[in-house]
Image 1 (cartoon, rainbow over the protein chains, first blue to last red):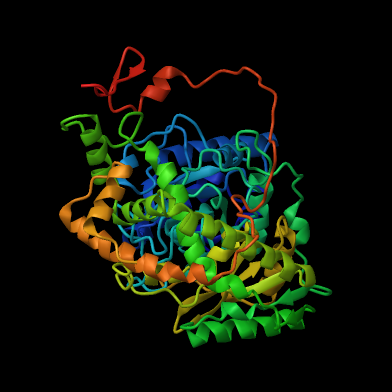
Image 2: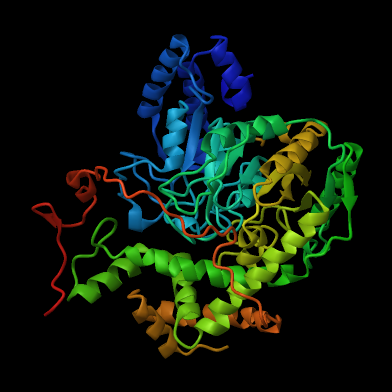
Length: 485
Length: 95
């Protein structure tokens, strides 16, 4: 087995036993990037020299006996998390040359745990998109079929994990941006409870919805990364001040006493039959593992989730992105008649079409005369959706749904039809609206294309999600299949 | 919910977003279509339902006001499109 194919827990064991050095492991991952990235384009920046330096330092720590949980393990970071001295572009012309003077809290914690960073991954511009086609630089390609999208916006992170071009990756999820690409690429992706992981240093898109989480080769790795990145941070006042459990304790291979529910509204109109079938088959496996499955759970406001989300998220984005005025950092047009003209030209040339569309939509929803009918209405509907999850999760421990209504779609297929593109997140965005955690795990294939299963839990219920996901993974072997690259 | 070209231009002006004629027409069409779809929200009875701004609410998050060092000015200005003597350079605001 090539070293790049290892999961974190396997690599960590080999490093601990000194059978492999971090430099060897890192070299194997960099060679893999060299081999596959020209075809899938997962990376915006590859930090080869820095990675090898960090690997040498990791090997020193391992021989000193001062190694931490992730010491010497290569990782890829989505390019919307600040990395000191390494450019952080958000896959936008606006930040193409932006070099942050500080690390995001997540990056700081991973460094403290001994991360070897191999690069920054491609994404939809400012995390706005579901296909990675909205990257201002180049699209990322799905390794299971290069004519299809990898999902988005953390498409580069998902592809880097799926192609063994990293051992694990970090992504961010505002309406499905970790889970949907994880499902489309057949890897594990967790969006934690809102506030579980600090957002400090994550370039803001929609601040009440954004959350950082891991993309990994298996559920054990997901728990390991969560052990490092979760927890309170005084620099993010929305981060939750509650203790972090050892998530690996949730990794037990049976589901005795676990109550699961399948909300019927998630089998939406237009859903691909193979996807619905895969989730039904998965529930049979979950029952065999000891769980009870309630098919009568109902979340009737689900159908309003898409509209509520696409008012709330763009509204917050239109405020957050007002900072890109060409004065403090980022792209700046100097040839202009006056200050206002410079600002208009800076934003007009610095932002791509989807970002502009959402800024306009958010501005509309927040503008005088429309605020009550759109923004405030969406926030009230948000309350109803949140309450509905609370209610449903009183009688069951977790909900099981498809991650996406279809398998990965063709590149270009939905690019000119925003509504169709938005619909690809219809199963994931209610979870961000409610602030609850959700994980996507590999649950099958249709004609060689991946299908993801989403498991949704109570606020701070990550342990239940990991338990269900782990037991399911142990009983199936979807996660062991590799894309034909 | 049909937007006019003037409304689209007004929105762009509110956020100082430069858009050309072709974009104005495309956004007019797409935003009209999106807003039309979002009329579905008006079907929901939200009488007496309070708005949720943050799903996991924390109230009155306070901390000690402890002085600490800021980032070095030279690092912060390193990304500035235009700077002079330790300051960001901006265009004339009053003309």
